[in-house]
Amino acid sequence: MAKVLHARALRNNGADYDRPYLQIKVDPETTLEDVLRPGFWAHHAQTLKVDSLIDILSEDGGMDVQVRVVGKGVGMVHVRPLRVWVRKEEADAAGEPELTDVDIPEGYTVSFAPTQRWRAMTNEPHMIISKNNMSKSDAIRAAIEHAQKAQGIAA
Image (tube, rainbow, N blue to C red; front, top):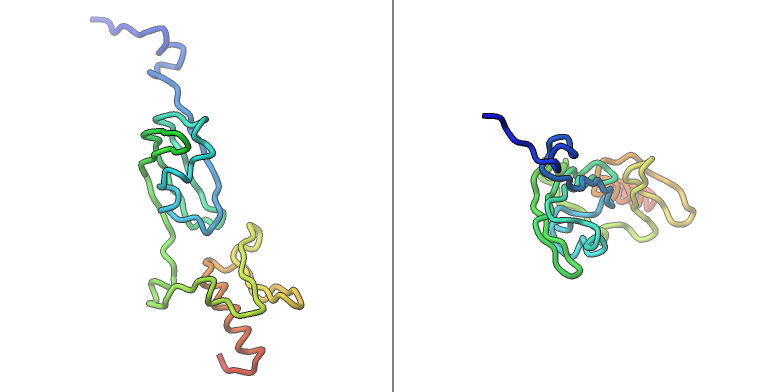
């Protein structure tokens, strides 16, 4: 018995339908919980379709996630994770606590730049004291160590 192909399937190289497959880059501070929240996608609600696939990559390489759009509402898009890879912080493996913005010493800034990864800087004078850190915690540690050295405190 011969298989009957529909004209629509023939136009799409045998596929039943087309679906959007998108890739976005997100800020390094964006978490998996953020991208799974329906409101995160509010600005894309009009363009995404149910069954669309989205690859989400963080600029620092710390997150690589693929999600499928499973539903839409006004100003929200519901997604389901299909594939998740998130870098496990070296600090977690060493048992060291995760550092946050409140741990950054006064007079220092920690930020991400694609060409320098996570970096620590002094505010006045503006100087980069550490760059190419794999995580924000590593850059904060570098700022803390520098501040202690600058104050004459042994690190």
